[in-house]
Length: 396
Image 1 (cartoon, helix red, strand yellow):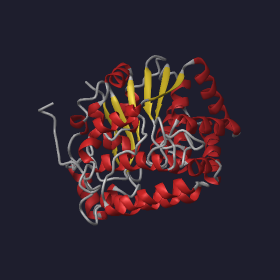
Image 2 (tube, helix red, strand yellow):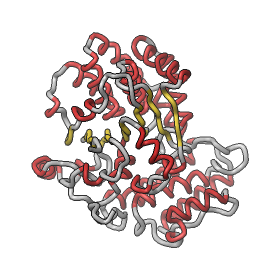
Image 3 (cartoon, one colour):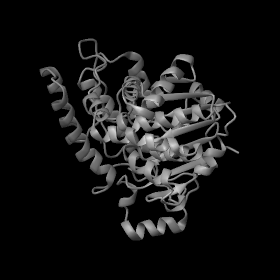
């Protein structure tokens, strides 16, 4: 679209920048953590060490020999063919991050025939979250919501989904009415009224929920879906998850099963929500989808036709999390006041996003909000996970 807004693509080539620190520091740390989290053999240790050296050298390497031909062709079409031999720091940061995780899965044998095929290297961390004391406290907090109105419960669960592992705080702030909507700490944009207007209680329409993280962050997403089904604001929810492990904590089908099982093993309101969702899976009101494009290094402007058609038919597509936001608006140095509706005008239907800010990209802020944030915090508000937003493009 020649008339669509544009801005420079974010790369990691600026020393001291957040993207540079991810490539230089976080990725090597992830390799070491993965190596120590599972009892891998010598071949996997060598492959992980090779990837660690490739990160240190800053040179992108091709997929190894023996890679599935379809997967190799897909990645070459996604940009690998022109990036092999280049520095991790000079290619688009979104692409570099995505390919790093693909290379990491190769190193541990995730895709290769053998005993480690399909074994999630990040599962120990994701699964441990579900049994943590914090998770028990967050699930217990649901009981206090049952005496609230449906509107109050909905707002609390929406904020729980927005903040993820700060869900317990969100339930308290939202349910008790201790803070006005405009004064909710850390919320830099709030289109929640527009979001609710797209989901009237008429028991029709489909919500496509594109998930972000597993564990303690997937559970609030499922609770929100359960509420929308129970209050007849949607007839059906379709949860889109990653086809393979990605970005350490991104949700897969196995993570969905773990989360649903954890809900059903709880007590009180949490168990009731779990039973509702379990029954909804059985009768088709809740379904799970995945697609290779969901783990691609590309923005959603390049949606394949089948996903585009599915999102076009939905009453609302709701994207969760920071990575989905980067792909939705484009991982670019937008001026923060660039209208969210302008950068998502390409999307085939109504779209909303719930995002905790953990990277530099941002759109849709007022000039006053941007000025206040910069004056108070410099640039750290963009990446620290202490601020969040709810943005909607109704597609009108």
